Length: 416
Ligand SMILES: Cc1cc2nc3c(=O)[nH]c(=O)nc-3n(C[C@H](O)[C@H](O)[C@H](O)COP(=O)(O)OP(=O)(O)OC[C@H]3O[C@@H](n4cnc5c(N)ncnc54)[C@H](O)[C@@H]3O)c2cc1C
Image 1 (cartoon, rainbow, N blue to C red):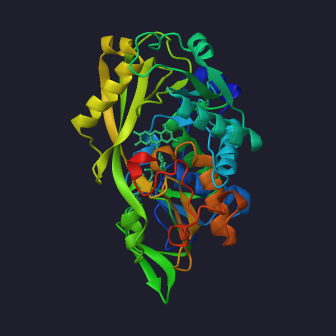
Image 2 (image 1 turned 90 degrees about the horizontal axis):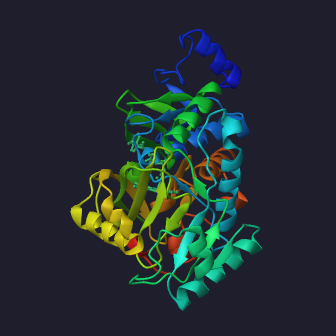
């Protein structure tokens, strides 16, 4: 069923009785060409591009919960491509280009909103770092503008410019950045992959990976064994646990990251703003709630529930930037499970086990990467070699020293 204005009008006249289920609920088959472990944004996008770009449709996505229960439905929806290093910039720019055509491509309203992402700076040193980043972006053909204090004030007059503990000196803006409705991305990719023949199997946890003579040949699941010629791991915060089933130890730590939403208010914030003197960022959802977040909780965990000290830290940063927040009531908070790599950049690569591929290490920022990650992972799986966009995102870079460390912060996840 194609979604269009004609379909909408037709259904309205028929009392909305003809809508079909967005994707099938098939039982697992005994074998597939490719099995993807994890039905988050990255797993679903990978399956979609395997079918679309490489003609593979004997593909299954195995999801232990339901579609949208993981980070893909828990994030704060920000997309951008404002990266500094050559290992990252072309990849994230490709992702932004795919976002720009995504709704037409998958025939789904994902509410892609290029409202601009503004990073504030509060010191001369930070201005220089942002100027460098903006210049690097422009050299890759990515839009960026360095703004002074008055330009920022004209754009976001509600911030504290006059009495701030960390005075705002200016900002770096990427106007093509913005937000996308996160769970619509999961649903849209699931529906589009299903239409191309991919089996999306929910409530199917992978409990083991069969490796024979150094080659992955199938998975054990709570719904029985499944054989596969190739297996792609896209389990985000559970990557280390899933990879351990094949005997791999990953350079990844899992941490909780929390997010918050306020009660709905009239339109106030029309872009995404990030604080430069603490870890805090904010935007406004189409329902009116202010959506904000900050740092990871800072200890290794597989829990989805965060702790109060980080709630306090985020609230303090918010108040320092935007004192009017103190008049709002907070409606909800929640946590997600982050796969923090040791240089802050992701891994999309083959593994030492033949037929086993890894997509992980997304840290705070994997949502914006969803289209390019799926596209590049599909390429890597189908052709058994990385695409130029993910060539630097190698698993062995932690042994070879070819790190992609945007901030030069070293192996400390909360600093990336
Ligand atoms: C609070 C918060 C805010 C964030 N904000 C942003 C943001 O603004 N912008 C941005 O770019 N990124 C953001 N992120 C990061 C982003 O959400 C993640 O990096 C990204 O969603 C991870 O990829 P995914 O969608 O595939 O993950 P997930 O949706 O977590 O998918 C992984 C799936 O694997 C499944 N799985 C795990 N183990 C197994 C198993 N054994 N068998 C079968 N299935 C399994 C899980 O159930 C899960 O559904 C945020 C994250 C959080 C938590």
